[in-house]
Amino acid sequence: MSPYPFRLGTTSYIIPDDILPNVRYLADKVDDVELVLFEVDEGPNNLPSSAMVAELADLAATHDLTYTVHLPLDLRLGDGGDPGHISLQKAWRVIERTRPLAPWAYVVHLDGRSLLAAVQAGTASAAQVGEWQAHSRRALSLAAEWAAGADRLAVENLERYPLEFIAPVIEQVPVSRCVDVGHLWLDGHDPVTYLSAALPRTRVIHLHGLAERDHKSLAHMPPEKLNPVLALLARSGYSGVLTLEVFGEDDFHSSLAALRAAHAVVTEEPT
Image (tube, rainbow, N blue to C red; front, top):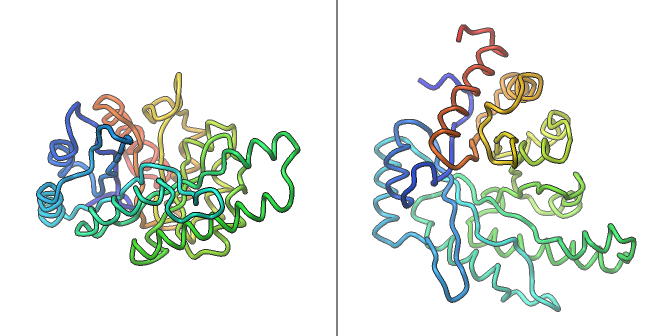
């Protein structure tokens, strides 16, 4: 029986191999695998074939696994509100292909880079802000239809964005949240306050350490950073997915050890 109240997950790129060998490797080590998918225009992609999806579904049934699926591009409408933007086309393809897996959540980003640049430069007008918010709501609503419910879309906070940048959008669309604690640490924020407010709608949490960059082992995070996050999850009884969003065996296994130690401390269990 898992010692955690949440479903422990990690990414589909822990061993240096494709998705299916990774899921086989992880099947007895985690409860959820984040399928990190990409699709390059007129180039390679790692979208699973129908046969692979069937095998992934079999592995899930055998090992009580779930999947979270990270959509490949930040969602947005095209210029003038065109719903045929490439990010939505690719989101549809990924959702349609992975539908038989009944994913726990589809992790999505909202593309707000141009607006953010204007806000930071002090040139953003109220009309620009309103248009971005309306377009973002429409993009999420379209993706929610494909995902069989807005609650299956988990909108992630991104590094270098103001903490409440996406709030006006997600307050009006009943999506879930993906709280990336590593991004909050990277930007110098205390994640506990942010996570406490977001938890009622949080379906996925991403956890990773900081070293020369983010997405490194949790072993790099001192107890005064990591333990309060685990204490909050223990107090709240959070039962969603917690993804160790790292890439590589060393970072994965050392993150598992750091997570176990922190959880033992905050629940007063022996390590």
